[in-house]
Length: 368
Image (cartoon, rainbow, N blue to C red; front, side, top):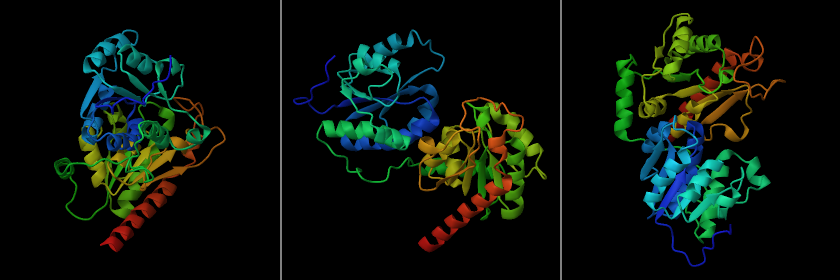
């Protein structure tokens, strides 16, 4: 198939974005999506993503509409079912953030004239605006991987985004009502109406048990936060992590913490993180969600190297102790004491968290 020739074509008025399949990856596409909106301000932009991400995409207010598919949809029939849905929409262009053969094939079968993305994973024949994947892009943070697709598209049309050259921003603007609702939820769970710091702890990791800092470490950290900072400690997580968090709180010295696992939707989670003095999370979607909420976040890394997929933001920091067995791809650690995570002590996490909170206080004082 020949590459698309755009010398006489009009600017696209209906754009489809094939998003990625995970919360963290979706947050890392936000800068590119903002630039896409900047390049084509009058275009109708729809996102195509799993239904589990609809809430996050809706709160972001980036797409005009969202096309979702159930996570349990049969993978063999999915391209044909999605083809019919996409064909009816009559898109002019699709931006393929997801690196998957299926999405490129489906876009081609749906007859979308312009299909933009990296020609990787055997997708080259179905992509007619091919973005070169250079070594420079491979070595940068994943945020720039997605940005390159959109900036290449802008150059293709002879357009430069106003945001070009600025530091990419993964945060989204949360409504006042969303923040107000989150504040009410915290007050209902015992948050005092004073200046005590609110610390949000995210000890789970749905897609990898190996990424979990040991539960007893989280319990010891929560005790330190209570005792040394007089913090109001909140635990957050998925419904499947309720038991994990209950066991952590049960092993604390005083159990002075709130378990909100399974009790918050995406909007409430974003609001609570925004109101928190700090979010401390494993290397999972929660850490990226905190960045989207403009929260300060400290991410604990062990079996994965931070590199290109660490939470990306001014107030995002990591704690990582390189260990001889990491990185690894194990779902569960094969060693009895989880050495890469056990080497990071509650005291070391507390010390870094305290410095982050202190720095933020000093910054706010000087700004005021």
